[in-house]
Figure 1 (spheres, one colour):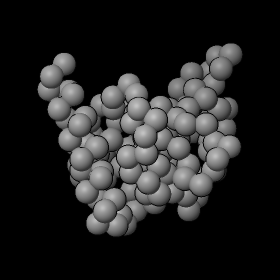
Figure 2: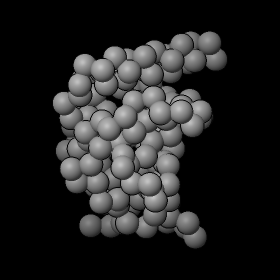
Figure 3: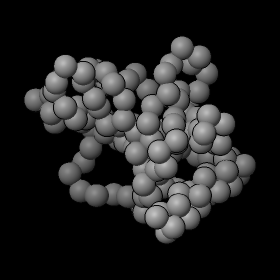
Figure 4: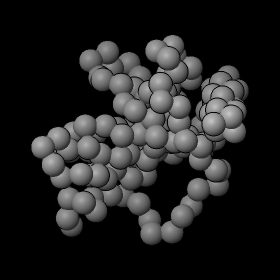
Length: 128
């Protein structure tokens, strides 16, 4: 398998919810990992999200939880995730990857926070 196609995704689209482009200041981080750098959120939906990061190899995210931030403030915390795809985007001096995750079972509070976060992104998209 080539580095450009390294992934865990099925070939058919299986998203149940539309994804919305993320605001520039939206970040994600592995929950509880104080040494982890934040990653740039690409898009988000009620079912999952995609983010990009700099690394040659995929992140070890099995059984992980992730936090979503907006303007450095925690917005939704400790969401369980399952990695659906992790691809190398560019093979240059700095390796950039794109990771797509599906959310696991969210608490009611997490669901409400996620819905509010998505609404911000919907509103920003319609005003731009």
